[in-house]
Image: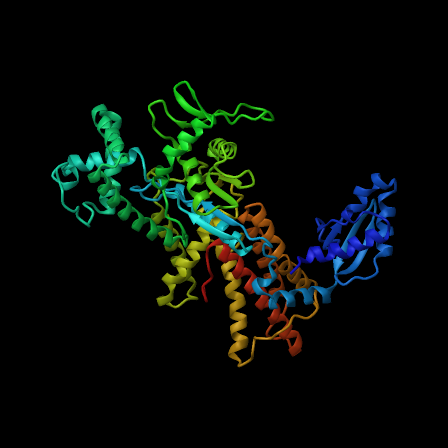
Length: 588
């Protein structure tokens, strides 16, 4: 269904045309002076020059011609030429009733759904997830869910770092510790063991040990580089070790991502693109897209309109080795062949912006993806501690993600048990739900590109702009609805009537913004807009709740209207937190 602001704009546009002005001047926005009006139009100001008239005269002409109207209630021309609008209360109620009865709360889904790949996650195998992996996972999951909500087909790809020097380091260290293993016997002809020769805990210790040793021991480093070369060229034993590393690592990653309520449709990695690299490089050379520069194979991506130098995209080092750019281009070859996406969205640290600009330009210039394919980079800022520096443990080390989640859950468990509002047997499960909301909302409520301070005390608070506050609001609404239903009364089929108070109308107008906010969040890849919206909606509800006797209302039809509105607000809040990646408990 149409957005409510579009309905208002259509009525005003007809009046502009009848008054002899271009319909395009009837652009309506939410008022920046809510004390004066709910919506406003500044078109008369914009049209003054074109029509050689005073803006106030144009505004008065338009209002005079406003005849057939449903959504526009009060309307007023204000000098020097603003048009202030208040929506009709009956129309607002009718719009919300239509939302309640529509699939997906009336969201305008894409007329031509797109195939979208969201590339997020990006962890390296054999390493534990740490807080540095939090933002890509949380933001990427939300972007994926928002795009699906808007009707698109979306594939989330973890894009593992699973092919490179780190694998050679692990193989070399394992060979030093367990030289008798069959993987290191070139004469071995049998089947390799099904069970890995290490646990995830041992694997996470092997890598940093090997990495540190390689920095001090040149011979060890050379052995690791050679092991990497042999693996990438099909060494049977090393490939078997690599498969063990992948199996053990992915199982652990899935467990950790499950705790974050993050799911990937594709568990592909850099290794999946390797088979496409040789043919891709040969084509780039044969068709003249790539050339040798100081021994390396590069693609020029500088454009005439650039105001600063954009370095070439390097696709092969002088020794023939591949780079991140090589893998990213080959991954686009694979994605184009397998999925033919209309759009690919990448999430990574904002400091990688230049890298992705080079890759995107190279992909378009060389025809790896069609010109019309959208390639978007959503760069995110750093999650910092209260000292303004990247978030660390108390000891100063990088905090493991599972430890951060556990700490937040523990904090929420204390608060929930102290409040004694939840039965002991449900306290842990509730703490998990609320803790996840605290983490995700704390992150997503910030614009992705900005750094932010991860403040455990503030994020776990039940007051202010926090996840627990949003959940508490939902639980409060559930409690009211449950009390009504406990009296044996039916909640289905209730309808919203015209608002009787300003507080009720304010809540209704916030609810009516849902479709507009979801569309804007998708277009701008901006989950923080949804957070800002549900905070405003929760505040509007709580003001209404404190000034209105909902269940004590004596007029039955009025009470039913209140409850119908509460049902809709609950559904909107639940739909929003679902795309943010968390859910509400029954009590807290």
